[in-house]
Length: 149
Image (cartoon, rainbow, N blue to C red):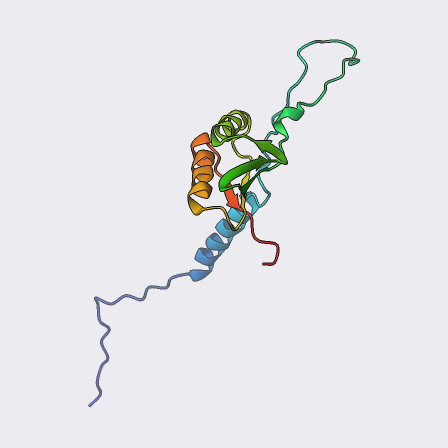
């Protein structure tokens, strides 16, 4: 007796064509790679242009007041009292340092402040100078490392 194979009527042969799907994916990939920008964004640099029109004979001098050196505050211990030296200039008191720091912070607050205490200076005086620097608005307040380190 011969058996007859019957096809299942519910099951249909579905042939998915993968080649067009892969082509579309590669085309999208190529499109996104070509349209992506791999360059560093160029920002507009701030400049001051002359508002006067003319032949260009007028010379523009750069503003050098914004080019400060780092502020170095040395704390010395003399006659059982602290002595302050700011950028090689002797300063009388902590109040004078406070005024000086506020003035410079009003012009250039991102200027670094370096505190260089002698080992004999009590730590409280160093903290006072640090606090005055932060209150004046300086973000970069650092301590000088010893020369033998």
